[in-house]
Image 1: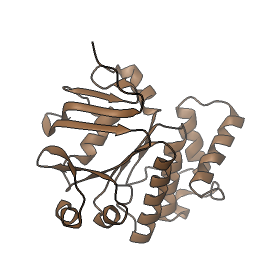
Image 2: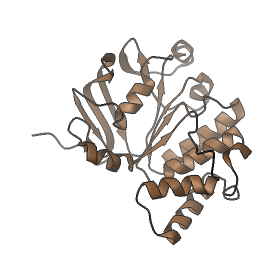
Image 3: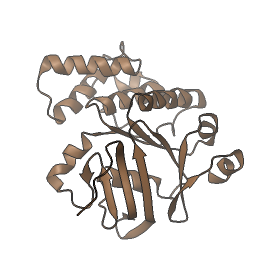
Image 4: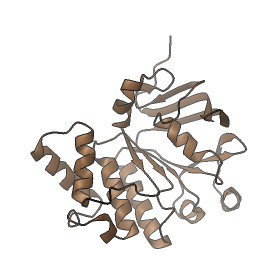
Length: 238
């Protein structure tokens, strides 16, 4: 019989292999994340950060070990249940992936309707709430190209919050942003974590890790290890 995952543990991987097609990216992966915990995922390009995030959202299958995310077993999850898992996750992409032919408001409405929302009053209220949370309450009528990079990333975070997820997976969310804007987005994600959501953020910006220390997991040489983030270690990781 499988042991139940503790109530405050929202992610748990034990002895897992992270695969990209037939290529082994990370072996013997062990990771536990609690509700409200903020975790950096660091390492060089190609080290496995994105593959790990894609495994957590069931974009890549988990073929061995044990894996639980938001109550779903990644080893046994049925294809029809993957959308239910993803409603408990908020995904923040580096390249925004906004629909360029519609406004901020309509991007968010599209995402809600795609996940089963039909009540127009509830839709409008939820869009208003998430835009307010990311400081864009007056930008709903704007087209994506009319926004700065930082504002577009705030829209992406608003979209990630729509279904009140338990986990935010942020894959290099500041990768295309200048240092000042990167810091603003990082602070926003930390605030989201402080409000009870687990946040896993992959990054290659050592300045953020150094200025805002938190638990840090390192992808290196095919392994995932926890790092003691002193200044010397930070410099070696990037």
